[in-house]
Image (cartoon, rainbow, N blue to C red):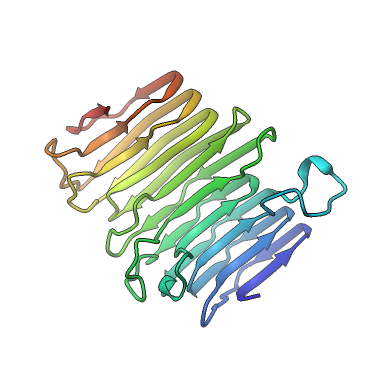
Length: 276
C-alpha cells in the first residue's frame, strides 16, 4: 500500500505523535479503511503526493461485517492536533487530488484543531485537483452521520484551493458543525452541498484572502436540501474584496430547499447574495 501509515479493519486504535510518514513516490500520509473508533493525536503528515489524512470505507456492501447496517463504513473517527503539510505532484495521477484531510464512506468524523499547510505548493500541480478539508461522508443513506470541525486552519500558498472546507450530506440523518475555523490566503471558505438536517457554520474567519471577484466565505449551492442552516459570526481580516464582481459573504445559488436559514452577527461591506 503506497502510504506512510496504513490501517485496515481495526477498532479502538490510536496513533500518537511524533509520526512523520513520507510517502515518497506517491501516496497518502495516514490512511485507514473500514475502521471503527480510531483516533489520531498530534500526528504530522509531510511530503505526500496525494492526501495527508484519509478516512475511507468500501463504496458498496461487498465488505464482510458482523453488523450488517455498518457494512464497509468507517465510523467514529477523530483527529486531534494533526497537521498535513506540503502536498505535491498530484499530477503523477490523472484522477487523484492533493488535499489535507479527506473522508468518504465514513460517518461521525471529528477534526479538532487540525491544520493544512502548503497543500497548494505548486510542485507537480498543473491541474485544479487541489482541496483543503473534504468531508464527503458517505453515499449510503439512513445512518446517523455527524461531521464536526472544532478549531483548525488552512494556510494556502498560491490561493489555488477552491474551498477551505467542502462538506456534503446524503440524507436528513446528516449534520455538519464547523466552528472556529480560519482560512488564510484563500478566497473561499465553506462549500455546502447535498442533504442535511442541520448545518452550523460559526466563527469562520477568512484572513487575507486573495483578490478575487468571485470570492465568498460561505457557498450554498443548487440542489441543497436542509431543515436548518445557521451562519453565525463570519469575519474577514485584511480583505481586498469589494462589492464589485460577484464576491459575497454568503452566496446562495440555484434551486435549494431550506426549512430555515439564520445569518447573524456577521458584519461586512460584502453582500449576502441569493443568485439565480
